[in-house]
Image (cartoon, rainbow, N blue to C red; front, side):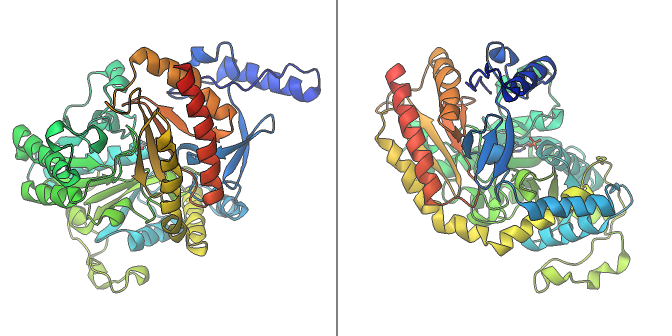
Length: 495
Ligand SMILES: Cc1ncc(COP(=O)(O)O)c(C=O)c1O
C-alpha cells in the first residue's frame, strides 16, 4: 500500500509555488488514490508526476526519478514516445470509438492477428478487455461457460496461489490470494481455492535444500487440491509465470511441465496470468514461452500498450473456442499470413455466444497504440535487449547481498524482488510494527526522495520490487543499486 512521500513544502512566494499549492489543495480535497491510506497525506504533499522521458519521470517540482517499476509494471518501452502517442491521436481522428459488440474495427482485427502470431501454440483468439482484472474475470467466466456448454456444468472452481494478486473486481478478487485485501469485501464469489506458491527462499524444511523437489511438491499440491475439491468441480488453475506479489517467485525447474500434466489429467484449464509477465518483462513476448509451457488461456494487459492507452485481454486456444464457433463456416481453409506455417488455424464450429462484454474493450485508440508499441518492440529488438542485459541486472542487484538487511534477491528478466530480513542467518522477518515503521515510515519515502521509483511491499514478507523499462542498460542498473545501497544501509541503522 502506498505511503506519504516527502515532496517538500512549496512554500515559496512565486507563481510556480502558488500553482503547486493549489494543485496539492485540490488533490487533497477531491482526488482518491488507489490502495492508499489517504490519512497518511494529511500532513504531507502527494507526489505529482507530470511528465516522462525514456526511463525517467519528473514531478511538478522538476525533480527527476528513475522509473524502476515502469509505473506499475506497464511502461515497457519507456516514456515520451511521440510515435506511439501520434498513432493514438491519428486513430481518434479516424474512428475514436466503436464497440466490439457485434461489430469489428480494423485495429482490433490487426492487433488480434498480430498477438495470435506472437502467442505460443494455438492461442489464436483474442477477447479484449480494458484491464488486467477484467481479463482475469473474463477468463474465469469463459472457463465456467465453456464447461457448461460442453456438458460439464459442475466445473466452476479456480485454484490460485497464496499471496498471488490477480486483480480487484469481485471475480478477480476471489482468485487473488491476499486475505488482507479481501476481508473487507467478504463474502467472495464462491470457488476460489488456494495452493502454495513457489517461494523457494521460504520452502518447507523437507524440500528446502532441493529446488526441483520443491517444484515437484508445489505442483503436486495442485494435484492434491484438485483431488480434494473433486476434479469434476474444478474449472481452471490461474498462475503467473513469475508470481509478483510476495516479491518475484520464479517457477522451479520442471514446475510448469508437471502442472500442465496435472491439468490435462484432470481436464482442468491452465490460465497463465501474464498481466505483468508478457510483453518482454521476461525477455519473451509471453512469460509461458520463457518457461516452455502451453497455457489454455493467457491473460494480458499493462505492457501491451506500454501504458500509452489502457488495454487488456485474454488469448484463447482453438479448442476452447470450439463451442463458440468462428463466425464463418469456410474459415478452416484460411491461413493468417502472420501465422503461416504454424499449427492451429482451422475454424471451430459451435454456435454458443460468450455472454460477456465491456464497452471500452479493444478501444480503437488503445488497439492502434498497441500496434505502434509492438512496432517499437520490433524496431528496437527490445526482447533481445532484455536477454542480453538481464544477467548484468541480476549481478548488479546481487551485489546488495552483502547488506545485512538483504535476505534474498530473486527474479528473471527485468523483474526482481529483494526480500528484506531482520536476521539473514535465520531468515527471521520483521514484526508488523517493524514492517510498518520500515516500509511505510522510512523506505518508501526515502527511496522516492533519493530519486528511485520502486515498490516497498509487505503483502507477503517485506520486499523491494523492481521492473524497469525494457530499454534500461547497465547505467540504470548501477543507479538502482547505488540508491538501494544507500537507503537500505540507512534503514538498517534505524532499526
Ligand atoms: C498478475 C496480475 N493480474 C491481474 C492484475 C490486475 O490488473 P489491473 O490492475 O489492470 O486490473 C494485475 C495488476 O497488477 C496483476 O499483476
